[in-house]
Length: 481
Ligand code: AHR
Image (tube, rainbow, N blue to C red; front, side, top):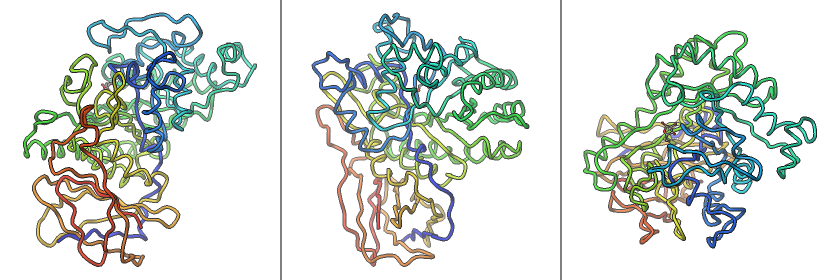
């Protein structure tokens, strides 16, 4: 029997809502046939965006949406996506040359999407293939007051007199790889060039420096060395960690279930070690972590498009469990992590939605974001799991308090045993009963499909807290009181 012990007086920090952020790239089927069906489509849409998906997404309170990539951002010219006559470009990130980028979705359409779902836009600026001036001009186009500059007037002619609110700007993407294959010292100098000009347009927009690929701490050290100091115009360290795959996406073994979660759990070590290096350069106040790509990365071809959409993959309870574990880690390190963006939203890596033609379904990961959404903006309190029987706990837990309401999210990482636990607390008298939601399917391989859209779903529970609570193996539980 385990005890989940909630320590109310020990506040870790406030959980930034942006930790529950998302990522949408012009890659595979994320936009075209995913989010975007076009205004003239017979599929119900709002200004071209798939209506049922918009409604579902809005329901989980998405705080921020990153765009247009990813690697695509490093080939993107923002001028292609404004005005009436938009060019068609090659997009390497769509397979088989079957679909080029026709730029149907550009700056105005993306900002509209963010309005529809209630999210703040986060733009990733191209620093591999453009100039600081070109990105400064994009900021001018988006942020300048009505009529104040020629670019603001062009924005108005394109239908948006009021400036857009784009609070977050990434300066490059994966510049250690697809974004120019730069060395950290070189990137840091380039970052200084771009950030100096971007700061000309806005002193309040947050600028994120390209962070490490997973545990490449050499990158972290080199970049911090290059940008630390009195100038340091930066507001976040945008690192990526994908926990890869273990076995087949839907037909994995118990050992592969474990292996996937071990890989996912490495997120905690990467957060701690990057934070140690940032702090060693005295940059902890300016450079909190922005984990702007994270998730599983299975071989593609298992989604409904059967390989037509690059990186599209099915998503089982195991992927939902990775999401639950990762979000608990972010909550418990909310003093270090200010934003995170699961990759990606639709028809791609660790997605929340699969969509095509008339069909649209949610994945187990969507349900996890739903169960966890009230952590956004809440105070995280310390939680520990004690156990008299074993050394290691297979319960992942985080807990938060907002407006006097406690939310405890518990994931049973074991695929072998149901677990009994009791809730106990310091600094608070727990109530005798509580409401709970349970994400569970007795088959750990369970996933939703166009044919069976509700194979994995959430059930409501009433818990008697005076007795031990049982969480089934592979289940995620959200308790509120
Ligand atoms: O999310 C898919 C790709 O993964 C992104 O384009 C890139 O940033 C990362 O390598």
